[in-house]
Image (cartoon, rainbow over all chains, first blue to last red; front, side, top):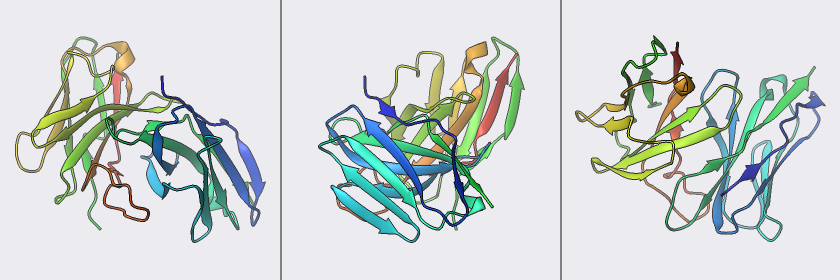
Length: 112
Length: 121
């Protein structure tokens, strides 16, 4: 059974701080990893994808991948109240299935 | 910017009734998906569809579910005999390609529609 685990939170950070969101996955065959943002009652929106060990930066967002530890994280710099949402981690194995397995999501609250 | 659309936004039905959820994927996309999300739970994959046939399906996608691309634009999910536990948000998604390995390419990105909230009474 492929599992993606996330702390449900809520993670509360002050405006301007760095928010750090973490995710672990059970399937060692996973090759592609995704972070989605989901506002309450809305659909998931892709923020970042990462495939290689290390960091990948896109604006205020940095995704970090450590395949040896089966760990993915998302850092949000200069957090804004508009970043308040649930962040979903998803992992997908290479070959065979191309379907992502989603975590339950971490609720982030950025307070002014 | 092109987007995935879904209708209806909300659907209330009686247990045992058939429902059809409709999606219009992004026009140049080739791969289509249905996901569901029970309130407060994970997003769960149901089925993927390519070249007019199912390419993958999950254990959830049993005989009461079917998908169809009746014309060049619509992609539908039918639930034949709804159960209480089918109450969920159903998301359609589409992507240009199925999967890529190279860092930075966005063609595999799955774009989600706004969802249909289904309530089975």
